Length: 279
Length: 108
Image (cartoon, rainbow over all chains, first blue to last red; front, side):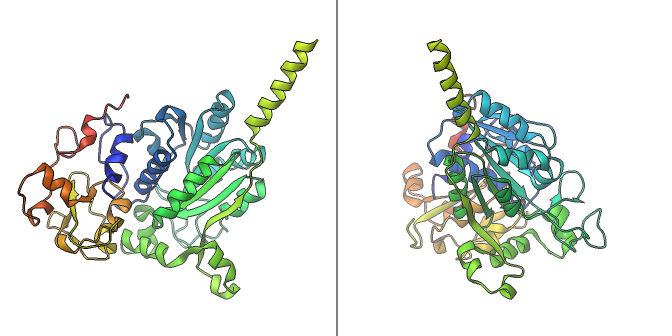
């Protein structure tokens, strides 16, 4: 364990003010650590990674790491990431978005990026709420959950991020939690290395805006909830339907090796250039 | 990752700790506790089994667990109980004293 913290410090921007801006107990810091460990384990150079982030708490992650980073407009992180990947396919483009950023404001961009199978790795930090803007309900807020804009309980159904992205045609779809850190590291590593569009949904508690309103006494209670409810997808599939209530499957749901859009584009371009040289 | 007791030292950077108590609540050996300032601190270093849970799950990168031998080489003849002491961070930079990352050039 001895080198983990030092490793993380090596990848942080030391001209930024620390400790970071996230609330006490916020899982975003754990995701930041997991991302850094994954990039380091893959042996990627800092210059070979481009981190694109949208607006919100999750968007602050890009400000703290010493990669090539872009902090973009709300919901448009994937459009910037698509442009970066098409311009320089050698870069490992990682996009960090919140649930609202990815599936509410940026929902259309996300499903089309998945359909195009552009070679971008997307980390969706799902805390079930718009944390930074005051605690409004998002498209992933569970039915009945209390938020600033749903004081009597959420009346709308929530998106299942894994099912939605799988149906849109992503190459890789997985789900992890900030409690199961080693699994999360593995999922992020696999997502970065797999070709095409890969999405990792990361369940991360927001005690300040979500937990306090939903009968979690402390941030630790939310971690205990993750520990007791998240189970590997292989175990989940063996459960009876009545046993699946409240359970959250984690692990890899989709893994394909179809070439990404940038690879197909490179092939077309090479073939076209060869054709023009012959003429 | 040796799971034997008494092989590690734990360094906590109090300026980075926000007192969320994740490390305290889930430590399998009850090594850590919140002190009167609301920060995580070491109370039973000899019980540490080097599982690494606190270091991996600290959202603020405020905990470092490392082999005790390395610390003893750095500071000669330090008693094991003293090695659990919290190192005071350098407030000017916001980074902890003895933090090797201070030597890291962020632009490199």
